[in-house]
Length: 247
Image 1 (cartoon, rainbow, N blue to C red):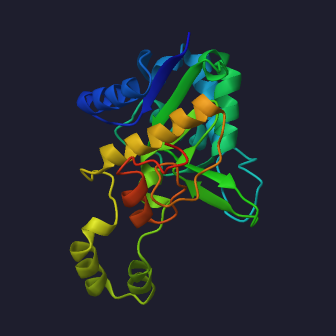
Image 2 (cartoon, rainbow, N blue to C red):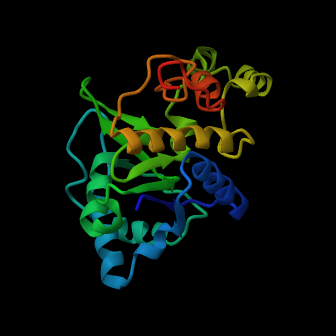
């Protein structure tokens, strides 16, 4: 039987979680299970093993595919602390595909079960290595499981060009004025619009799971569009519209 399992690895309210579950239930009337990600960790050995592997898959250079080959005890301790402290997001960068591999290896059930849509909602920063030989920060990484980063929603799609121009020339006062006047053009982590945007990305996860298709839409008005700019996110993922093809 098909089911949906949402793993929460960030600090959000129960009301938010209920909204996401209701949205997913509208898509497919099936059992939806919610768990704190930390509940997967059964004992101290599992905690230490996961902390070490998280330290090992850190991205240390954006233009070098090699990951964190030399792991220090302080890095493992840092990861242990963050696994049980969702109030503060990790500041590290991680390989998204390696993270998926870790979860599938450590917990084959549910993360390898194709009848289960597993989604990890997190505040970690995940990157993927791309054809330009650089790592790029990601909002969503589709697969088994799907990884959806709230921090990625804020930081991966670019703000409008004026923001970077003012930042580049060091015009701090002008930059703050620009940010105040253009809040409708970009997202922040505690933005009231974030819930609807997250639902848009939950739909992308659902579409991948139903169709086993991770090809994004080329229509910038479609919720399945791969948004690279904040304004595109607010157009496509916030509104949940489907193009004629995907409707």
